Image (cartoon, rainbow, N blue to C red; front, side, top):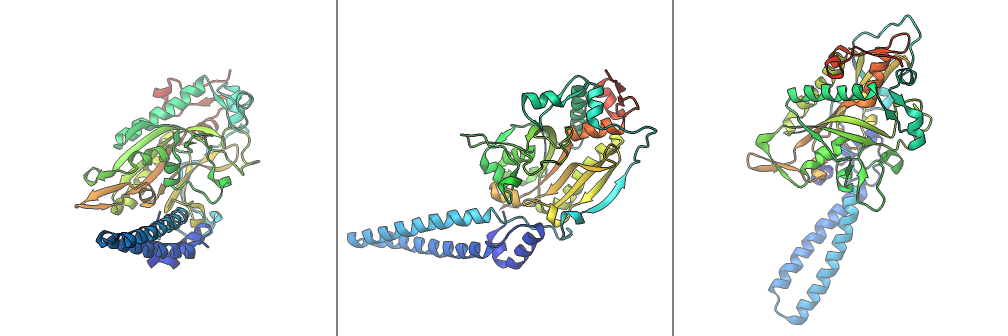
Length: 408
């Protein structure tokens, strides 16, 4: 969340940024009114407590206590509404972010050569069936549409991507974790996944529990330090988490329904970094560089997209996507992203760091290493042979133990 003092002193800037992100901010005047009301009530409560301690008259003391109870009850109800509205204020876009709709996202660069085939390229669904590594039909039968099986050499391919990613991340100083696939609502909301509507929230709730299925290990990695004070000498702290991820994909009917590009369950390797505020931009560039290194080493053409304000979401201040070339669609599609969330998440989760004897809120950044299903799609389609088999990228051969995934 934002600092209320900042909101008071920069109300118009907060409104302008929220509107640029596409958020309804009509409640901001009410928030400021509640903020003022809270401060007045707090002053009155403190004054009444002081009077109560000094007063020795029994009747007068009873009168003060009754008034104090009323003020405290009013303060509680005001604070509940105030806190609810505070959680609805989105983070500010960084000063270098273009104000605009998602259609105005900027292509920063394009890297690598698009493959040329002397045959009509197949899509990953057909390749997956021919090589017997995907079973989407039975995934639908056993679960529902949006769930699928990976099998045989497909399992080896996914595991090779995990091992490739972990080796890279260890060399970059990351601590590797396998995280829970569920988190308390406090951590979901704390990371900024309180969307503009339930439809956009994209999270499965576990009935009867204060638990949701996570959509990214960002939630479980940032949540590691909830209500803690981190030693500033240890920053930056770099985590990488492997988890299953779950998204309802509400409102996505008709979009990418074929195959495993847009699904309800997938596995992902995610980076999260806690850093000093002054290191935010440097760390963000480092995360993007790691993502680019991986796609360069896989030998797949990609482009880097800098997101306009309307495509940032609630928590992100700045965000880059990497889109890999998908031959069957004849276009680039998103495979990773990396975002700076400044101190937005740490304020919400009460995560502080001590630097020069002073407690401040550190910045958090996140970045996808691999959304494994999408990485597999890119490999299958870009490395395909005419019959439906596909070559294994050079960097994965030692992990997978094969040069090629053959048709069955």
